[in-house]
Image 1 (tube, rainbow, N blue to C red):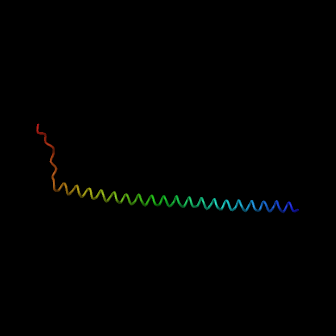
Image 2 (cartoon, rainbow, N blue to C red; image 1 turned 90 degrees about the vertical axis):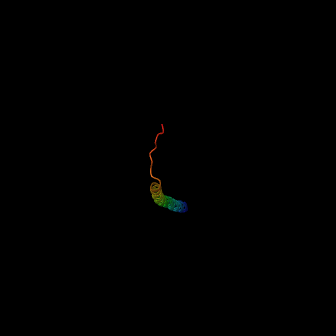
Length: 81
């Protein structure tokens, strides 16, 4: 009888350990997934920010070209030969 109690107690402890391990692994998986979602969102924010900067630089460049064209008219190259 006593050996049966020890066996059942051992099984109970093993079952509790497995449950604890599974819970720990699930928390770990959840953290990895949460971190991946955060990194993806951060990457999307950075991409949007860089896209806005690029558009701003393109607008500045276009404005500078227009100013330059207004000040210096285009003259085709002439051969002196």
